[in-house]
Image (cartoon, rainbow over all chains, first blue to last red; front, side, top):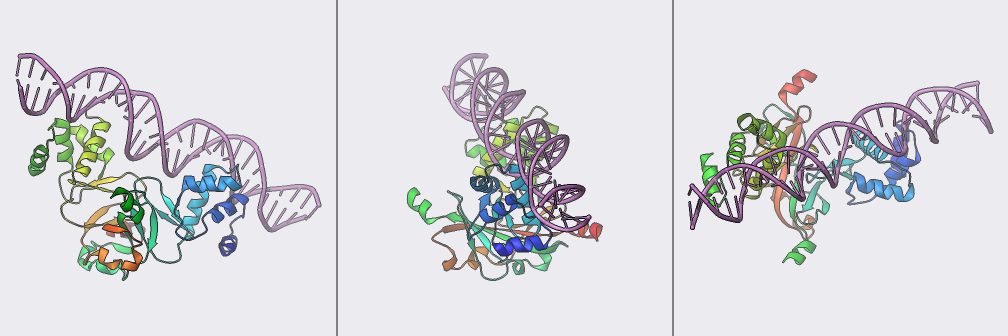
Length: 140
Length: 140
DNA sequence: TTCTTGACTTAGACTGTGTCTATCTTAGGA
DNA sequence: TCCTAAGATAGACACAGTCTAAGTCAAGAA
């Protein structure tokens, strides 16, 4: 966390209270907040922070590779601070909960040359979908 | 195509000119149109068709399992008529072009029991990302 | 320490995508 | 041919995100 702030400062980031609070809100495991949720939590600590600043800061952190942008549904994008360990996502149909998961093997390897159509492929994102234990109990 | 209209009629669909035109627009391979694009093409043949009708019809076709909803970026959802053959998507970073691709193996099998967190998993979507041949030429 | 300046923040207007509602039209059965 | 519920329509609305112009401030300079 403080490593993050150090890294950012090293890259020439001006360290404002707004940026610090956004970075703090995104600390932790299995954190997948929307921009609005980040804004709400940041505003608890810094009431005057604006939506634009949250969007700007999130965009900068994504560009710097410090957080990941995830859109598992057609709704708001979510931001995942777990950017330094490769992983995929598991999403509940019913409640939308997201878990980080680690499948075996490399999904890229499953795409034969004949299916690459001249693309230079650099990433493969896998989204697993299902019903979480809680939702399964309540619905059945 | 006419099979599609037959199937829909069998399921009690009222066959209106609007629905027919939307279904026709979505015919073909590697078709991944946004709702607005579907509306524009439908309006070429039926100028008075409304956006709401296009959205309604697309939603019904998705519910019936006749087309797939794909959101590969955070922008508009795209609609894929290739719903009866399992496949994944390959997306160009630069121009957004989408290709249907067929990886080997079952991505679901790559997720060990210990990584399932009590979920009942029913689907795995893979999005491959890279640069298509055209964009690679123009940028390099 | 104070000054300076350009990077940063802000409020709020604006855009794109999708949904909803009240009213009108029409496919298809009687 | 007529009836009627299913479907279509225009346009208001909602949500997520972007942009702009003006004000603020972090951090280097003196």
